[in-house]
Image: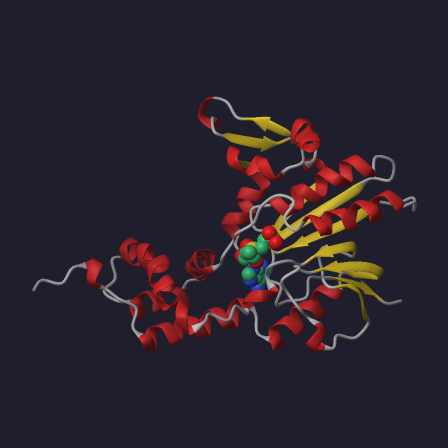
Length: 271
Ligand SMILES: C[S@@+](CC[C@H](N)C(=O)[O-])C[C@H]1O[C@@H](n2cnc3c(N)ncnc32)[C@H](O)[C@@H]1O
């Protein structure tokens, strides 16, 4: 039987090699059940390079940092939506309403994916912080989603999760080639900034924040990496500032210094 490109499969030993590289670069711990998912996601790169095996592709990835980036973009899971986990936005609303310092309120959406979380935060900031000003920074390891976040253009179906008042104020219906999409009003973008960033590394560039959203990303890490990531992120959190993780995540077993638990998913930096 003639073998075609479509018969190329990711062997167990090749999968182990990809897993190790992904873990080293971004801290993501791929489970043993993700082999066929990885095979499918990387297959288009096999086709693109016209190589005969996943090992041959791995060699390219190891030598070429642009391709390594491309591979990581394909491996990450970027599911997100506007106003995800409403309880956190209710909490934020209280913080913003009570903020009476004469300076900008700064929020970091760490692991921002395509930006739905950052724009949800920005809508509330714009509403409740008209006097002091605000800034929202979104970062992600995946350069493709960072580009999408900067554009702020989403499928129309995503608008359903946005509260009606925000929808009316900030969501612009697409026309012509943007039919079926909506654009988040660029009035918010002037106080926003999106960049590529790896949470495995300390970020010395973006300054400190009053609140950090670190949601639905810790789930991809083992405990040691989780601890490292939380400790890294805390370096960018002001004393007294809040760290918000997902309602489905838990860091209580990590015994992180200087972090006081406010409720199941919200922490405050001591000091
Ligand atoms: C499921 S999304 C969560 C998006 C958003 N925070 C939310 O809760 O809806 C997880 C994001 O984490 C990003 N990510 C994974 N590992 C990362 C790392 N080491 N550094 C920065 N971002 C990472 C992925 O690219 C992905 O966009």
